[in-house]
Amino acid sequence: MIDGLRRGVAAVSWYVGSVMGDHDYRRYVEHRARTHPGEPMLSERDYWRNRYADQDRNPGARCC
Image (cartoon, rainbow, N blue to C red; front, side, top):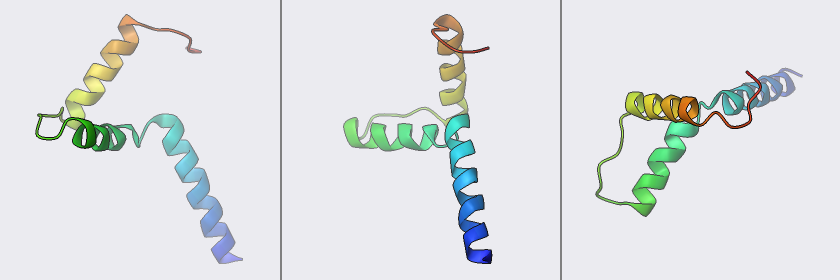
């Protein structure tokens, strides 16, 4: 029973993290390393600044 509870908590944690974008910077780093090896990449702080600035410039479809 405890193992099932742990899996449930882990699944909810993964889902909330995915919705909130917790894995986005890691995916960005993996993509840059794979497609542009040797080129500089943004720090995590700069990545989020650029991402939020882009969302402000191009709001698109979002609820809030």
